[in-house]
Length: 184
Image (tube, rainbow, N blue to C red):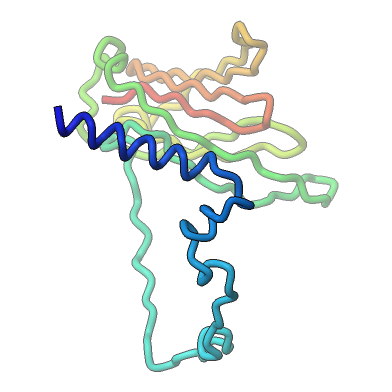
């Protein structure tokens, strides 16, 4: 009972202190005059930062991520390329997405070792070279290439190898290329 009474009294005092206007003088008691004073900043904080050349900053070497090891999309910046006319055209960003569960249903060969194939995708004013990871049995033969549109109207380039490996490259409306690979 006493605990409830003290909580109610404390709560009432807090509400009363907030509700009392400043002209009554209660606010002067609650807020200390130090809050109104401007705090002096020492000169050392405002001084310019001196460079220290005794400390060596080393950057770590870049880590190459494999699409076999991670399921998160891997983004690769593409440099600008030049068309036949000589003017520079911006290369699209390439995003890699791996679908390993669908790969178990589609692959006829065992994808033990991976090889790399570079294909040219005709986008914009310049063709874009995209690096694809495929099983080694697929690196010796050229893929069948087909171009179509999906339900959203995006351009889809489908690369199919005789061993059963299939890779779709979808061109988004933003110009980015999304590589959907079905790898183990």
